[in-house]
Image 1 (cartoon, helix red, strand yellow):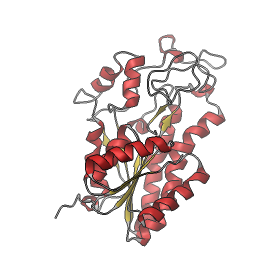
Image 2 (spheres, rainbow, N blue to C red):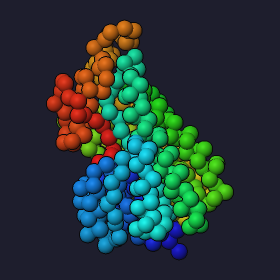
Image 3 (cartoon, rainbow, N blue to C red):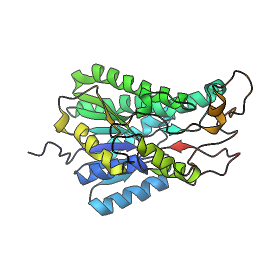
Image 4 (cartoon, rainbow, N blue to C red):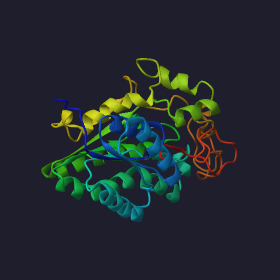
Length: 311
Protein backbone atom coordinates (compact mmCIF):
# COMPACT_ATOMS: atom_id res chain seq x y z
CA UNK A 1 0.00 0.00 0.00
CA UNK A 2 1.30 3.45 -0.94
CA UNK A 3 0.49 5.64 2.04
CA UNK A 4 1.52 8.75 0.09
CA UNK A 5 -1.07 8.12 -2.63
CA UNK A 6 -3.61 10.92 -3.09
CA UNK A 7 -5.29 9.51 -6.19
CA UNK A 8 -8.78 10.87 -6.73
CA UNK A 9 -8.51 13.44 -3.95
CA UNK A 10 -9.34 17.07 -4.71
CA UNK A 11 -6.63 19.53 -3.68
CA UNK A 12 -6.70 23.32 -3.67
CA UNK A 13 -3.40 25.22 -3.82
CA UNK A 14 -3.62 28.97 -3.28
CA UNK A 15 -0.80 31.09 -4.62
CA UNK A 16 -0.36 28.21 -7.02
CA UNK A 17 0.93 29.83 -10.17
CA UNK A 18 4.61 30.21 -9.32
CA UNK A 19 7.34 29.33 -6.86
CA UNK A 20 6.46 26.90 -4.09
CA UNK A 21 2.77 26.94 -4.99
CA UNK A 22 3.35 25.81 -8.55
CA UNK A 23 5.73 23.06 -7.41
CA UNK A 24 3.18 21.89 -4.84
CA UNK A 25 0.33 21.86 -7.39
CA UNK A 26 2.47 19.91 -9.84
CA UNK A 27 3.57 17.45 -7.15
CA UNK A 28 0.01 16.76 -6.03
CA UNK A 29 -1.06 16.23 -9.64
CA UNK A 30 1.81 13.80 -10.20
CA UNK A 31 0.66 11.89 -7.11
CA UNK A 32 -2.82 11.46 -8.58
CA UNK A 33 -4.81 14.33 -7.10
CA UNK A 34 -7.29 16.52 -8.92
CA UNK A 35 -5.86 19.98 -8.43
CA UNK A 36 -7.23 23.52 -8.26
CA UNK A 37 -4.53 26.06 -9.10
CA UNK A 38 -5.48 29.44 -7.70
CA UNK A 39 -3.99 32.93 -7.63
CA UNK A 40 -5.35 36.41 -8.23
CA UNK A 41 -5.18 36.39 -12.03
CA UNK A 42 -7.34 34.04 -14.08
CA UNK A 43 -5.05 34.04 -17.11
CA UNK A 44 -2.10 32.87 -15.03
CA UNK A 45 -4.25 30.22 -13.35
CA UNK A 46 -5.35 28.93 -16.75
CA UNK A 47 -1.79 28.89 -18.11
CA UNK A 48 -0.32 27.01 -15.17
CA UNK A 49 -3.26 24.61 -14.85
CA UNK A 50 -2.96 23.79 -18.55
CA UNK A 51 0.79 23.20 -18.31
CA UNK A 52 0.45 20.91 -15.27
CA UNK A 53 -2.41 18.98 -16.89
CA UNK A 54 -0.43 18.51 -20.10
CA UNK A 55 2.62 17.26 -18.19
CA UNK A 56 0.88 14.98 -15.70
CA UNK A 57 -2.40 14.00 -17.35
CA UNK A 58 -4.20 15.06 -14.18
CA UNK A 59 -7.51 16.89 -13.94
CA UNK A 60 -6.40 20.45 -13.14
CA UNK A 61 -8.65 23.49 -12.80
CA UNK A 62 -7.38 27.07 -12.88
CA UNK A 63 -9.57 29.31 -10.76
CA UNK A 64 -8.72 32.84 -9.65
CA UNK A 65 -9.35 34.12 -6.14
CA UNK A 66 -7.86 36.91 -4.06
CA UNK A 67 -7.84 35.20 -0.67
CA UNK A 68 -7.16 38.54 1.00
CA UNK A 69 -10.65 39.62 -0.01
CA UNK A 70 -12.90 38.07 2.64
CA UNK A 71 -16.05 38.29 0.54
CA UNK A 72 -14.48 36.76 -2.57
CA UNK A 73 -13.59 33.41 -1.03
CA UNK A 74 -17.08 31.87 -0.59
CA UNK A 75 -17.82 31.95 -4.32
CA UNK A 76 -14.39 30.45 -5.02
CA UNK A 77 -15.02 27.49 -2.70
CA UNK A 78 -18.52 27.02 -4.10
CA UNK A 79 -17.15 26.88 -7.65
CA UNK A 80 -14.55 24.29 -6.65
CA UNK A 81 -17.24 22.07 -5.10
CA UNK A 82 -19.52 22.57 -8.09
CA UNK A 83 -16.74 21.42 -10.41
CA UNK A 84 -15.24 18.56 -8.38
CA UNK A 85 -18.04 17.78 -5.89
CA UNK A 86 -15.66 17.62 -2.93
CA UNK A 87 -12.56 19.06 -1.23
CA UNK A 88 -10.00 16.79 0.44
CA UNK A 89 -6.80 18.82 0.61
CA UNK A 90 -6.19 22.54 1.04
CA UNK A 91 -2.74 24.11 0.83
CA UNK A 92 -2.88 27.72 2.00
CA UNK A 93 0.23 28.93 0.21
CA UNK A 94 -0.70 32.46 -0.91
CA UNK A 95 1.29 35.04 1.01
CA UNK A 96 2.71 38.52 0.60
CA UNK A 97 5.54 40.62 1.97
CA UNK A 98 4.83 43.98 0.32
CA UNK A 99 7.88 45.91 1.50
CA UNK A 100 10.60 46.15 4.09
CA UNK A 101 9.26 48.67 6.57
CA UNK A 102 10.58 49.88 9.91
CA UNK A 103 8.00 49.19 12.63
CA UNK A 104 7.94 52.90 13.44
CA UNK A 105 6.61 53.53 9.94
CA UNK A 106 4.05 50.74 9.61
CA UNK A 107 0.61 52.13 8.82
CA UNK A 108 -2.72 50.49 9.68
CA UNK A 109 -3.46 50.00 5.97
CA UNK A 110 -0.11 48.32 5.37
CA UNK A 111 -0.48 46.05 8.41
CA UNK A 112 -4.02 45.08 7.41
CA UNK A 113 -2.95 44.30 3.83
CA UNK A 114 -0.39 41.78 5.08
CA UNK A 115 -2.72 40.20 7.64
CA UNK A 116 -5.60 40.01 5.17
CA UNK A 117 -3.63 37.72 2.88
CA UNK A 118 -1.24 35.92 5.23
CA UNK A 119 -3.59 35.24 8.15
CA UNK A 120 -7.22 36.01 7.34
CA UNK A 121 -6.88 34.34 3.94
CA UNK A 122 -5.99 30.90 5.36
CA UNK A 123 -8.62 31.29 8.07
CA UNK A 124 -11.40 32.18 5.64
CA UNK A 125 -10.51 29.57 3.03
CA UNK A 126 -10.12 26.84 5.64
CA UNK A 127 -13.40 27.51 7.43
CA UNK A 128 -15.27 27.42 4.13
CA UNK A 129 -13.55 24.23 2.96
CA UNK A 130 -14.03 22.53 6.33
CA UNK A 131 -17.71 21.46 5.95
CA UNK A 132 -16.96 19.85 2.59
CA UNK A 133 -13.98 17.96 4.03
CA UNK A 134 -16.02 16.78 6.99
CA UNK A 135 -18.86 15.67 4.72
CA UNK A 136 -16.38 13.62 2.71
CA UNK A 137 -15.02 11.82 5.75
CA UNK A 138 -12.14 14.12 6.60
CA UNK A 139 -9.30 15.98 4.99
CA UNK A 140 -5.97 17.71 5.37
CA UNK A 141 -5.12 21.42 5.51
CA UNK A 142 -1.53 22.61 5.18
CA UNK A 143 -0.70 26.22 6.01
CA UNK A 144 2.52 27.58 4.52
CA UNK A 145 4.26 29.66 7.16
CA UNK A 146 7.96 30.60 7.17
CA UNK A 147 11.08 30.22 9.25
CA UNK A 148 10.57 33.95 9.77
CA UNK A 149 7.77 32.98 12.16
CA UNK A 150 10.38 31.99 14.73
CA UNK A 151 12.62 35.03 14.69
CA UNK A 152 11.85 38.58 13.75
CA UNK A 153 14.29 40.67 11.76
CA UNK A 154 14.69 44.32 10.83
CA UNK A 155 12.09 45.55 8.39
CA UNK A 156 10.16 42.27 8.52
CA UNK A 157 8.10 42.65 11.69
CA UNK A 158 4.79 42.64 9.81
CA UNK A 159 5.67 39.48 7.90
CA UNK A 160 7.10 37.58 10.86
CA UNK A 161 4.08 38.49 12.98
CA UNK A 162 1.69 37.20 10.35
CA UNK A 163 3.57 33.92 9.93
CA UNK A 164 4.00 33.37 13.66
CA UNK A 165 0.27 33.90 14.10
CA UNK A 166 -0.37 31.40 11.30
CA UNK A 167 1.52 28.71 13.20
CA UNK A 168 -0.61 29.17 16.32
CA UNK A 169 -3.75 29.44 14.19
CA UNK A 170 -2.78 26.07 12.73
CA UNK A 171 -2.68 24.60 16.22
CA UNK A 172 -6.09 26.02 17.07
CA UNK A 173 -7.61 24.73 13.84
CA UNK A 174 -6.16 21.28 14.54
CA UNK A 175 -7.57 21.21 18.06
CA UNK A 176 -11.06 22.31 17.02
CA UNK A 177 -11.38 20.25 13.87
CA UNK A 178 -9.86 16.92 14.91
CA UNK A 179 -13.33 15.56 15.86
CA UNK A 180 -14.41 16.20 12.27
CA UNK A 181 -11.59 14.12 10.86
CA UNK A 182 -9.73 17.14 9.49
CA UNK A 183 -6.01 17.40 10.20
CA UNK A 184 -4.25 20.78 10.08
CA UNK A 185 -0.50 21.23 9.89
CA UNK A 186 2.00 23.83 8.74
CA UNK A 187 5.28 23.93 6.92
CA UNK A 188 7.84 26.69 7.46
CA UNK A 189 10.17 26.93 4.46
CA UNK A 190 13.59 28.51 4.61
CA UNK A 191 15.43 29.85 1.53
CA UNK A 192 14.02 28.42 -1.72
CA UNK A 193 14.93 29.33 -5.29
CA UNK A 194 11.69 31.11 -6.11
CA UNK A 195 10.88 34.34 -7.95
CA UNK A 196 11.39 36.15 -4.66
CA UNK A 197 14.87 34.76 -4.22
CA UNK A 198 15.83 35.44 -7.83
CA UNK A 199 14.52 38.98 -7.60
CA UNK A 200 16.55 39.50 -4.46
CA UNK A 201 19.68 38.33 -6.25
CA UNK A 202 19.12 40.74 -9.12
CA UNK A 203 18.54 43.63 -6.75
CA UNK A 204 21.36 42.67 -4.36
CA UNK A 205 24.08 40.46 -5.89
CA UNK A 206 25.14 37.85 -3.37
CA UNK A 207 21.70 37.64 -1.72
CA UNK A 208 21.23 33.97 -2.70
CA UNK A 209 24.66 32.95 -1.44
CA UNK A 210 24.09 34.67 1.90
CA UNK A 211 20.70 33.00 2.29
CA UNK A 212 22.11 29.57 1.48
CA UNK A 213 25.11 30.02 3.77
CA UNK A 214 22.75 30.39 6.73
CA UNK A 215 21.74 26.72 6.33
CA UNK A 216 23.66 23.59 7.32
CA UNK A 217 23.80 22.37 3.72
CA UNK A 218 25.04 25.78 2.53
CA UNK A 219 22.65 26.05 -0.37
CA UNK A 220 19.26 27.34 -1.39
CA UNK A 221 16.53 24.75 -2.04
CA UNK A 222 14.69 24.01 -5.26
CA UNK A 223 10.90 24.48 -4.97
CA UNK A 224 10.37 20.78 -5.69
CA UNK A 225 12.13 20.00 -2.42
CA UNK A 226 9.07 21.05 -0.43
CA UNK A 227 6.76 18.66 -2.28
CA UNK A 228 7.66 15.58 -0.21
CA UNK A 229 6.57 17.29 2.99
CA UNK A 230 3.31 18.38 1.40
CA UNK A 231 2.55 14.88 0.11
CA UNK A 232 3.30 13.48 3.56
CA UNK A 233 0.95 15.90 5.29
CA UNK A 234 -1.77 15.65 2.62
CA UNK A 235 -1.84 11.85 2.56
CA UNK A 236 -2.57 8.98 4.95
CA UNK A 237 1.17 8.74 5.61
CA UNK A 238 0.62 11.42 8.27
CA UNK A 239 -2.69 10.10 9.60
CA UNK A 240 -1.60 10.62 13.23
CA UNK A 241 -0.05 14.06 12.66
CA UNK A 242 -1.97 17.26 13.33
CA UNK A 243 -1.25 20.66 14.85
CA UNK A 244 2.44 20.47 13.93
CA UNK A 245 4.79 22.78 12.06
CA UNK A 246 7.44 21.21 9.84
CA UNK A 247 10.47 23.43 9.20
CA UNK A 248 12.06 22.91 5.78
CA UNK A 249 15.25 24.91 6.03
CA UNK A 250 18.23 22.50 6.03
CA UNK A 251 18.87 23.24 9.65
CA UNK A 252 19.02 26.97 9.00
CA UNK A 253 17.74 29.50 11.42
CA UNK A 254 15.32 31.98 10.03
CA UNK A 255 16.07 35.37 9.23
CA UNK A 256 17.04 37.58 6.70
CA UNK A 257 20.67 37.29 5.65
CA UNK A 258 20.91 41.03 5.08
CA UNK A 259 19.75 44.28 6.64
CA UNK A 260 17.70 46.74 4.61
CA UNK A 261 19.77 49.86 3.94
CA UNK A 262 17.00 52.21 4.98
CA UNK A 263 17.04 50.78 8.52
CA UNK A 264 20.56 52.10 9.06
CA UNK A 265 22.22 49.03 10.59
CA UNK A 266 25.62 50.69 10.41
CA UNK A 267 24.36 53.62 12.44
CA UNK A 268 22.80 51.59 15.23
CA UNK A 269 19.10 51.18 16.12
CA UNK A 270 16.53 53.29 14.38
CA UNK A 271 15.62 56.43 16.30
CA UNK A 272 12.04 57.56 16.93
CA UNK A 273 10.71 60.28 14.71
CA UNK A 274 11.28 61.07 11.03
CA UNK A 275 13.71 58.79 9.26
CA UNK A 276 14.74 57.68 5.80
CA UNK A 277 12.61 54.56 6.12
CA UNK A 278 9.57 54.35 3.90
CA UNK A 279 6.46 55.97 5.26
CA UNK A 280 4.35 53.41 3.41
CA UNK A 281 4.83 50.44 1.13
CA UNK A 282 4.73 52.80 -1.85
CA UNK A 283 7.19 55.49 -0.83
CA UNK A 284 10.70 54.09 -1.13
CA UNK A 285 11.15 50.50 -2.23
CA UNK A 286 13.86 48.00 -1.38
CA UNK A 287 11.82 44.93 -2.31
CA UNK A 288 13.36 42.24 -4.51
CA UNK A 289 10.35 41.40 -6.66
CA UNK A 290 7.96 43.45 -8.75
CA UNK A 291 4.38 42.19 -8.57
CA UNK A 292 3.61 42.81 -12.24
CA UNK A 293 6.93 41.93 -13.84
CA UNK A 294 8.49 39.42 -11.46
CA UNK A 295 11.89 41.12 -11.46
CA UNK A 296 13.97 43.55 -9.48
CA UNK A 297 12.07 46.81 -9.16
CA UNK A 298 12.99 50.15 -10.58
CA UNK A 299 13.63 52.00 -7.33
CA UNK A 300 13.18 54.51 -5.92
CA UNK A 301 10.31 55.09 -6.06
CA UNK A 302 8.09 52.20 -7.19
CA UNK A 303 4.57 51.72 -5.94
CA UNK A 304 4.08 48.38 -7.70
CA UNK A 305 6.64 46.28 -5.85
CA UNK A 306 5.78 43.29 -3.76
CA UNK A 307 7.48 40.20 -2.50
CA UNK A 308 4.87 37.49 -2.81
CA UNK A 309 4.19 33.83 -3.41
CA UNK A 310 0.82 34.57 -4.92
CA UNK A 311 0.57 34.86 -8.71
